[in-house]
Length: 230
Image 1 (cartoon, rainbow, N blue to C red):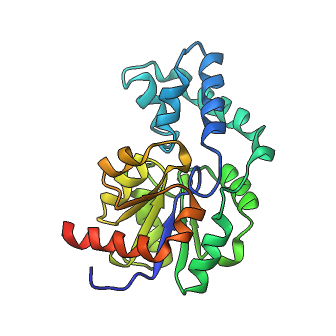
Image 2: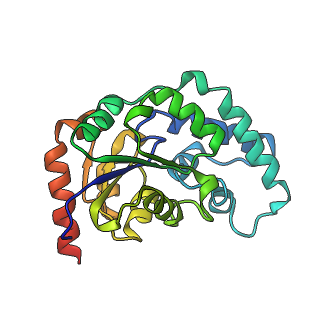
């Protein structure tokens, strides 16, 4: 990479907002409503995949898709009941503010639907320092496909060579990696550091506050890894 970093792409669920386990519970309940006994641990590990793919991932590509729309609707309804329980992860707001203070552009690239995104943004309460926002409705395919990341780059007028991605799931790492964007992983979504590193994360921190405390180190490490992988 020859360009200086000018932007940071952020996932939201599990990265800036503590919502992964709320999603897990909502999906678990929705599956049970429609006669599917899917272990919560499997659901948790799938969070970050968009609703257009998560049912195939958890029920198999050969499952009867006739009830998929009802399942997605059930999840959305159940998850909506927990919106008042959403909380920012430690340091999330300040991390965005610090990046903006440094002249970096904050871009949100999430697989959340627009209604969910509205609830997340209200919880995050950082609109003045967010440059660009994209959601699942803006892309053809959700993560781990890179579509949402591509839309985020296009709308923010940033190049892949001048950004880093911050996410909490292997799906974030894969989506960023498809565009050769270095990904900084956070374990705040419930995955361990080793798994994120094994899937290609350039560096891993505990949560937004930990990343903020080591921001210079994180950006330097991310770009050093990206350079050596070219």
